[in-house]
Length: 410
Ligand SMILES: Cc1cc2nc3c(=O)[nH]c(=O)nc-3n(C[C@H](O)[C@H](O)[C@H](O)COP(=O)(O)OP(=O)(O)OC[C@H]3O[C@@H](n4cnc5c(N)ncnc54)[C@H](O)[C@@H]3O)c2cc1C
Image (cartoon, rainbow, N blue to C red; front, side, top):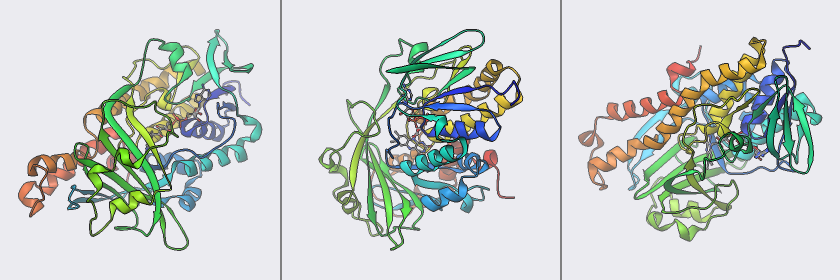
């Protein structure tokens, strides 16, 4: 192996860390992954992986496997709280992208990545039960410390240890509690027959008066699907953000009691949930430095953002691609970490702030505002549909998954 290919410490084996390991491996750069969890467990519920992320996962040869697990989404659909149709926009291949948009169980995505890492890098490259407590460095190397086990030394360390990153805390010890947006989310999965196109990522209503996001994430042989649903509601306080905090129906059901639309019975969907999780809408104020000598931050550790618009995981995947390319191209790994920060920091900080100010469901908010929350007779009398499309395009542009940015089918 050439000298410029450093032995890299990847701290965290989530979506970003595993993608990073695969990207480095593809370029012949050795790395070791250190993950706090003692066993691999599929956590969370559904996640949307849009064409910008699937482009990277396809370059890693994972698209056929993802196809077996997830649902290739066909459209984004928007409805008001009376179940009235506002807008449908094609997505993924159906919108002309070269790559699909997959809606997938977060656990399935993690498994696809984890299995690929074990197969390609070997089981010895992943160290479970390694909770990093901090890093030390000199001019040539970095040493990561771990709870209850010995330290490990490499030439650089990339901290992909998620929202509650220990390495970020080392560099930003006074950051304090996460920034809470005054919104709480409840999420669940329900197995049932398909609705709408059987591949629609559907948003209904507004946060103030009840909002749902609903999409299928798994197909079963008997024709049923696993449907992921989530709601956002205003709240004054919240619990710690964790992938596995259980939620209770009675805490959020009120706005949805009458949402039995002719195209979907929402109360029945919620009542049929296999389990319900609760998660607060939290992020952190952007920072202006991720790279500290031979250590940098990546994914949620670098730019924790509101989980809206299906983008946190995607941005971690894009980070992984960029940093791997730069480490391959540049002789000095510490310089590559700086170049990575230069390329990615402003872009992702902008998404963090956009997600606070203008989430994709701003389309429904706009119609709600114009109708005073009442049913409409004809949408065209309220707003020009072209204006709705323009609002949606503006979000996609900032989030980096507009057709122009990702590229169309060749
Ligand atoms: C409710 C919700 C819905 C979301 N929906 C979407 C979506 O539709 N599309 C999308 O792209 N993104 C979505 N996201 C965001 C996405 O899940 C995250 O942005 C993504 O998981 C970030 O990847 P990561 O690798 O940085 O962090 P994680 O995936 O959280 O992985 C961090 C890993 O580090 C490990 N770890 C933690 N501390 C330590 C330590 N001290 N030492 C070693 N290991 C450690 C953790 O166990 C974990 O395995 C959603 C998030 C939430 C909360």
